[in-house]
Amino acid sequence: MSEIILIHVTGEDRPGITASLTGVLAEYGVEILDVGQIVIHNFMTLGILIHIPAQAESAPILKDVLFKAHELGVELKLHPLSPRRYEAWVRTQGKARHIVTLIARRVNAAQIERISKALADDGLNIDRITRLSGRIPLSGGKAPRMSCVEFSVRGTPHDPVGLRRKFVDAAQELGVDIALQEDNIFRRNRRLVAFDMDSTLVRAEVIDELAKRAGVGHKVAAITERAMRGELDFKESLRARLALLKGLPESVLAEVAETLPLTEGAQRLVATLKRVGYKTAILSGGFTYFGEKLAEKLGIDHVFANELEIKDGALTGKVVGSIVDGAKKAQLLKRIAKKEKISLQQVIAVGDGANDLPMLGLAGLGIAFHAKPKVKQGARQSISTLGLDSILFLIGFREREAVREEA
Image 1 (cartoon, rainbow, N blue to C red):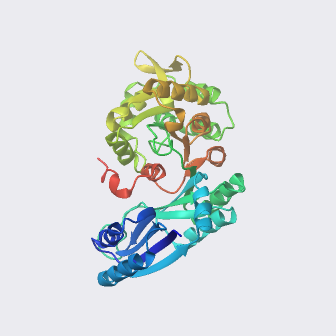
Image 2 (image 1 turned 180 degrees about the vertical axis):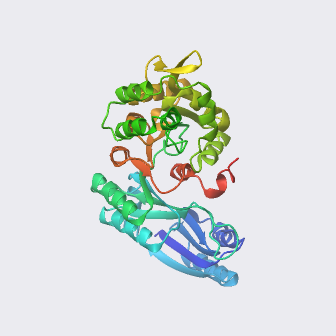
Image 3 (image 1 turned 135 degrees about the vertical axis):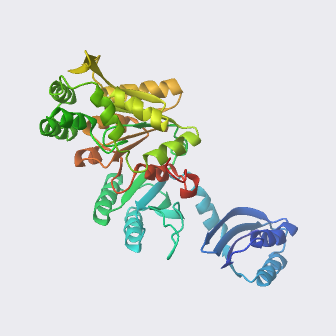
């Protein structure tokens, strides 16, 4: 009768352990049904699921592999499995899989407990937990700005909406970000990232900055705030704000462009995306003048925004052509995806305002970035605690794979 045995190895990690143990198995022509290894702080855990055919004797194989483990100074345990149990395990392949990403300044036990309990309560099993961020020194050296742990999870949630709500509540209470994504081929093959500009790529609302210089800052800011909360139609609010800027000298645009602060992690994110071949876009209800300046600085591929009408060296208080609002952003996203010959499921959209919701909903990965409550509720994912470069963790990047420093 054939035998199925799980070989479980633990001990201090060093080169050659896996090679030595599998070398013993190779001498007997043993079939490997599954294998997995993980190392935490130089301590290794290795699992090898083997199949010994009926015509072979298991005793010599197991004796030799136990002796080799003793030589290597590692602990080895053998766990026989019944064919019925093995076949039941085989049948579980094809189950839905999800990725849960925890992003925080520092990861602690309370955060892990909250996530793992929510998963268990919803019938999901954690297959693997991986640290994506860099190692944290206890003293001396530069500590990472952020920490990230990724959970690979198997199964279908009993209550997907309820599970997301639990993660939203936990994120708010613990001051972290928690993302839940289906682990499919599209998650591993995103190709385009589209950004809102104001309060997303830059830490400012450009129209508010222009208004300050026009002496109508408080009036325009009040309208902007209501529009971002979705209380006003975007087109009407933009026309009302622009009318207050009539007569502002064109030279002010350059002054404002020079002072716009980039959002934390913006340069690092875009530089990393460019290095691995992503396309990037700015889809903004702001203005092309600033979008193009930003695109030149960061290396953005596509820019769509509103063009300010200028006559006799001053703003007229109007735009040229149609206004880019939420619906237009969604249309433009489709156009860019088609031009780049990619699926919308391969698109990431990032924004903070109510007029970003259409494109966030259209993209395979829509992220509300430091957004208003209404926008967070409408988006599938949100980042509220860290910078734009934390998006790299949602794509599965490790800290060491990202561009090291902002240019």
